[in-house]
Amino acid sequence: MSDLLVLDEERLNNVSSILVSQPKPENENSPYFKLAEKYNLNIDFRKFIEIDPVDAKEFRQQKVNILDHTAVIFTSRNAVDHFFKLAAENKVEIPTDMKYFCVSEQTANYLQKYIVIRKRKIFTGERTASDLIEVIKKHKKEKYIFPCSDIRKDDIPSFLNNSGISWSEVTIYRTVAADLSDLSEIFYDIIAFFSPSGITSLYDNFPNFEQKKTRIAAFGPTTAQAVRDAGLILDIQAPLPNAPSMTGALEFYIKKANGL
Image (cartoon, rainbow, N blue to C red; front, side, top):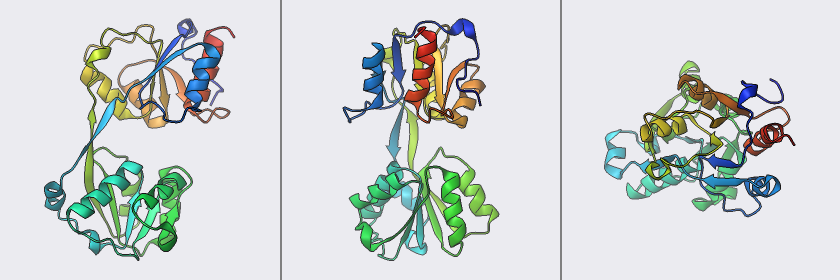
């Protein structure tokens, strides 16, 4: 991969405004704020997707018994929140010997909101689902429950099926498009996306969206592919070899586009 993905040199126009399709960071030291200050940018934040939790009745209708399993696979903090919420609503007491397989250390640490971590068996990947699969390979005898969204990647389920591992999937929340109607007359030089669901939300809100001079940034290969599949021009792709974050990739682009 090249240091910077620029598909069309003619689109390298000056950048002064960016819309990030995520909630505004709570940390005042966020690299987005530093980027805005350094290059005198207007950076706005807006969730393009919202989480619609499954209620206790719908959870029971899926006929997946948590206590039939010995391990839980968590790929997000949303999954952690809604799993324990539904367990409580259904009066299911999670046994102390339940094992937890988390996609990252961050997700694993988030478990302390619900359990005493030092008393539980927790296994973590480095950052990606592929990392977590390598961990699961060492524990094939467990009976896994995979609480997830109605929209999820196939990598973990495919691995579990192909490996003959005992597991159940249960939908505990849905990913739905947020209402963005108030943005209909607002123009940004760059819109940054982090999931295919963000692209879906864009067109759910604006079916006739025309990209024109708006540059599109995408984090991760699946998001980048969703941009292309939608017929949009992908101007900025992250992560890059020397810029593992979206802010790093944006900064490379801004330097070039603004002639800095």
